[in-house]
Length: 443
Image (tube, rainbow, N blue to C red; front, side):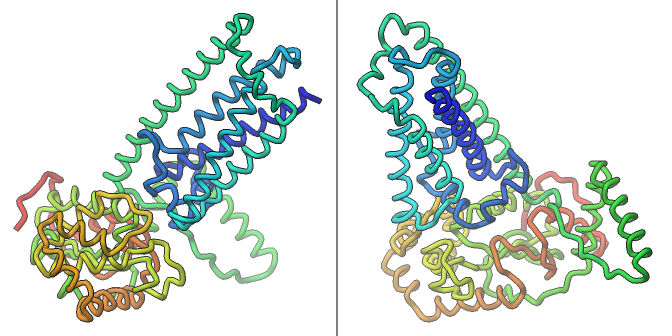
């Protein structure tokens, strides 16, 4: 029975480790276990909000990485007991119980942060809490924590050293893996405007007899199988599909008369981004655009539009994903009125946000040289609120429902990943010369 309990605890540790990998994947936006797993918690929903909060990192490492380390160390502690004699000579089991009980206490604190501070729930995080409770239950017969100090006895020296070495190996692996993911995240931020993402193909209406429909379906299935089995052919298909979607998209009329802009004043290509200052994906997009514009050789102008995911100024979303985003947006409008929008923009995106207040907007405004009193009065004015409401209303009219949403010369992009492809298509349509890709002097 004892050996069965240890085996169950080991299986639960493996499940916890898999959940920790998913959470680490969410934190960096890298599909470690596949795109479907990455999307399982919902894009822009609780998992994203929690994973991008300021509570998601401890001592420079994401909590998910700490979780991965914890489960790896626990596996190294419990595995030897599974194959040995299980009795009082195994103080590793009470030690394991003590470690997991401590983890459960930490889970209570983290759940409290989700409830009271972040005000969003991460389903995968909660799943790890249940895993830890299940491990506690499986190790309950070994709850005599006073026996845990037995691991320090000379007779257990070899076991303790082996566990220590295994734990150090796990720690080194986690740190190295985290560093690699940080690099991939940085590369993703730089290339956020690059490759097209997966797109869905509408199903065609089927005609003819049952036999004809079956034959057509089999031919279509074979075509898709051949395409999916060939990575190069799949990428060619996706690129062509993205081109067709962009070129056939409806051209929307967007008012840019009061929108802050960067790039050449009379550029033939207009890029519009509907954004939210608290959105981590918008932060990545801002970094990508900042790197792209100097290479565009005065062909592109980028404009910023407000679409806060906060019901206090955007009731159409139904539920606030970013409480306080409206305050930051009002601060941005007032910063623009004083010629400091882009300084304010960069300072806001330099921080991670769970929720924001008017005081946060005033603090950032003061840091870029704005007078707090005048900024507060501006943010409270009906005119400023009206400008924000105008952007939000226009966003709904042109099909914005999430952030960031981009338009190139009025055509909506399916994702930021098709941006460079869309720019290339516009250059062809307008007979513009190709660019060298090196930074050009901006007007």
